[in-house]
Length: 257
Image (cartoon, rainbow, N blue to C red):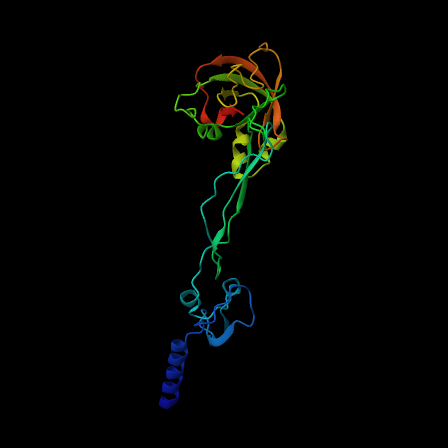
C-alpha cells in the first residue's frame, strides 16, 4: 500500500511539473486545444487551454500563468481630417489602428474610428464661403477651444461675443446619439438658458455676426438652431441678450459654427 501511495503522489507531481497549458494556448474557443492534466477545480482529466475555458470552468490548472490575458492595444488617435464638405455642416474623421490583438480573454479592441461635426469656411478653391440664412449651427464649447486665437501674422483675432437664448424646444434625437462627440447634445434642455459664442472663423469680419445669431431679431421671435454632427438634433430658442462674456454653466455653453 505504501508503494502504491508513493507511486500516486509521484504521478501527481509529474502531472504538476508537466504544465498542462505550456505551449498550448489558443486565442479563440478551440475544443482541440486540450490536454490531460489537473484542472483548476482539482479534478484530473481532460482540461483546456483556449479562451473559452474560463467561461466553461474547465481550464488546465496553469492556464492563467501559461496563457496570461493580453488586452487589445491601440495607437493614439490620428489628427482630425478636414470636413467632408465645405461651406456647410459636415463631418470630420479621426482613426487609430490596432497594435496588439487581444488574447486569452483580454479586453477587446475599442472603436477605431470617430466622427464629429464640423464646418469649413472656405471652398475647395480657397474662397470664403458666403454667410447663409437659415438656422444657427452650434457645437460644443470644446470645439471652440481648439480654434486659433491669432491670425497667420500672430495678431490676436476678434474675441467675439456671446448670445444668450432660452431653449424653447428640441427633438428627441438629441438624446439618443451615443458617440463620444455627440454626448454634449444631451445637455440641450428645454426651458434652460444657454450661451452661444460667436467668434472667428464663424464670425465674418465684414458683418461682425454669425449665422443664426438672432442679433437682428426681436426677443419674442422664435429662432431655429441645429446641432452639428447630428442633423436630426434641432429645435427652437428665443434670444435673451448679447453679452461680451458667457455666464452659463459649461454644459449649457456652445459655439456657433
